[in-house]
Image 1: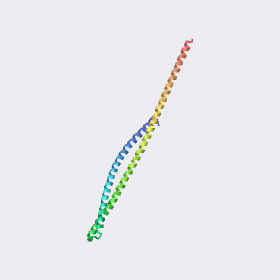
Image 2: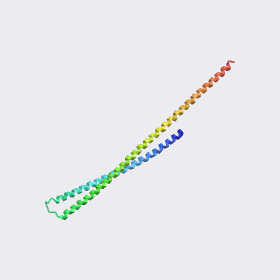
Image 3: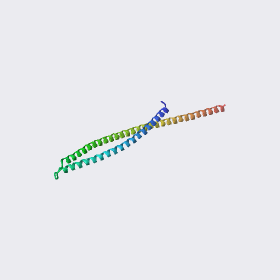
Image 4: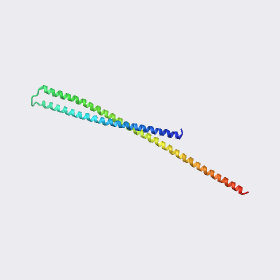
Amino acid sequence: MTRARIDHALGAIVQRLRRADETLRARLGEERTQRDEACEAVRIREDELARLDDTVAAHAARIDSLQTGRRPVRIDTLLGWQAQRDDAQTRCRAQAAAVTQAREALERIEAGIAGTRNEIMRNDARVRQCEARLAQSRAQAEREDADRQDEEAEDMVGTRRLAGRASNGTVRAGGGR
């Protein structure tokens, strides 16, 4: 393969890698947006879980106060409060599961971001490597061109000397007769 073809191929590879870099960076931007949305979803679910925890604690405190025996309590009132507490605990468990799912989704998104960043770093390394090879190839071509020009100049000087000697020899030969 000629140097020109190699240089052309390396240039095409660099262009392809740069297009891939643009695609990867766009994907990274999308993933960051998804991460921000997932963080907000986690925050909302955690806030709701805290609110439900407070509700469960309030119901438990109310039930405890009813069971102290200081005043008479109707059994249906106590059972009603226990049912409300049980319902709040069920919602609290469901919300805790939702928080866990939201956190897992966030972790998957963050893993995707890390993977995309790694791909960007590998792609950047490939671009730098190809650009370095292309620069080396071009520098080698310039050195070879300079060497060729030096050889041509030396050949011209040698040709002129021979021509000069030949013309001096002709004059001497002609002048000596």
